[in-house]
Image 1 (cartoon, helix red, strand yellow):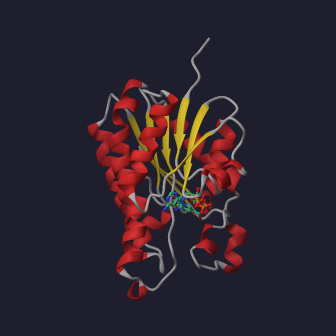
Image 2 (cartoon, protein in one colour):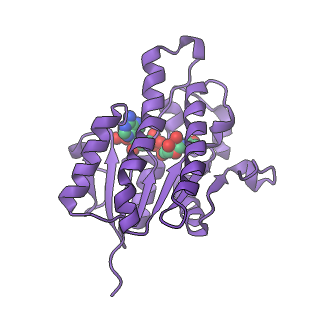
Image 3 (cartoon, protein in one colour):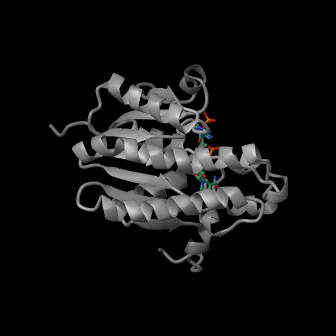
Length: 234
Ligand SMILES: NC(=O)c1ccc[n+]([C@@H]2O[C@H](COP(=O)([O-])OP(=O)(O)OC[C@H]3O[C@@H](n4cnc5c(N)ncnc54)[C@H](OP(=O)(O)O)[C@@H]3O)[C@@H](O)[C@H]2O)c1
C-alpha cells in the first residue's frame, strides 16, 4: 500500500489555504497553520487535520512553533509544503507606519523564507515539493505597495531556490489572481463591481493543485490570463 502523503499548509484557516486543506485532507495527513487560536481553527478545519497557531508577524516564533508541531507528529519527512499564509492592507504608502510595513514583510516574505529553509531537511527526506503562494499583485498594485514588494520578493526567492535545490526538492511559486476569499475586505479595500470577476475560492484551489501537478517553477493563475492577456510566466 502506498504511504500516506504528509502535507503542511500555512494560512489554512480561511480562503485558499482552507480550500486546499479540504481538497487534500481525505487522502493525506495534513498539518495546517494560521494566526488564530487552535480552538477557533477547530471550528473550520476538517476532522483529523492537525493544527498549530503560528503568527508569521513573529517569524522566529512562528517557525519554531511549526517545527515543534512537526516533531510532535513525528514527521521527519514532508511530501508537500504549501506556504500560503498572507496578509496585506490597502493604504497609501505615505500613511504606512514602519510597524505596518514590517508586519506585511514579515508575514508574507521573511517568515516564508526562513520557514522554507527550516523545512529543507524534511522536504529532502521526503523528496518533496515546496510551493510558495505569491500574487499577481507582485507586479505592482496601487494601494498595496508593501504587499507587492513582499510577493515580488517571494518570486525571486522561489526562482533562486529552485536552482539551489534542483534535483533534491522541487520548488514552485504560484501567483493567484483576485479571488473571492474576503481578503480584500479584510485588507480595507473595496474592489466594487470587479469582485464579480474574482475567481471562486474552490476554483482557485483546484487550479493551484493543477499548477502543482504540472510542476513549472513559476505559474500565474488569473482571469486576465484566461482572457488571453496572460502575464508572462517567468
Ligand atoms: N484573495 C486574493 O485575491 C489573492 C490574490 C492573490 C494572492 N493571494 C494570496 O493567497 C494567499 C491566501 O489568501 P486568501 O485570499 O485565502 O486570504 P485569507 O482568506 O485572508 O486567508 C489568509 C490566511 O493566512 C493566514 N494569515 C494571515 N496573516 C497571518 C499571520 N500574520 N500569521 C499567520 N497566518 C496568517 C490567515 O490566518 P487566520 O485566518 O487564522 O488569521 C488565513 O489562514 C495569501 O498568500 C494571499 O496573499 C490572494
